[in-house]
Length: 252
Image 1 (spheres, helix red, strand yellow):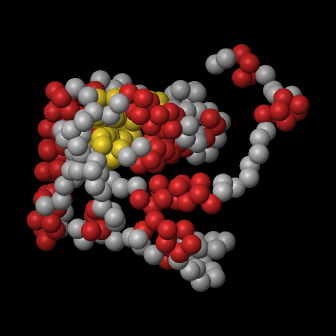
Image 2 (cartoon, helix red, strand yellow):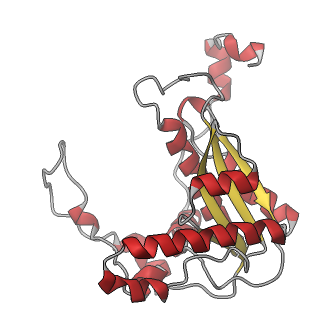
């Protein structure tokens, strides 16, 4: 750790580091909400062209600017273009998907088989996002009472990556049907590093206007008002109206 990070900052230094915190203007605000509401989990719509390095680095830089508890920045990003490596991951996915299918209610298995659940080979870039749980020692600021905040911080990096990709016209698909032990062996991830996300990344021509699993009737979005409590768990509060002022501009 750098020596200057161990020295308490003086009040005047802290004041100099402060900047304006005004709200965004209407156009900027609409752009942010549009990115959030039109972000999709892309699986089979990838085009063949590679993602240029400058765009990829902007997306990764956005991920690197995610919030992290105690400013721990526990993430690493393994960028995978090699087809043989992606092929090995795809084989691991097929094994995991077959095992998952057997765990489902038999009535849902046919529906499951018809879903497109990954784009490992079709996406030109795959990214494995990991979490170094010892980067700042056994605890780190903010982890003494909630030790999993490093994993949660890494998930924030995944979300930043996803939103930045959406802005760049790049699709992202999160492949969660993978055994961590197999993925760890394929990518050479050390045992003390947690695997958080495996992402398929590439340009797309089209994307669903709603989440694909909603379009294909696997699940639907829960109403926000059923998920918001006041002051304590389970206590309903003032009736909530849908945030139409945010949504109307970019869902038509």
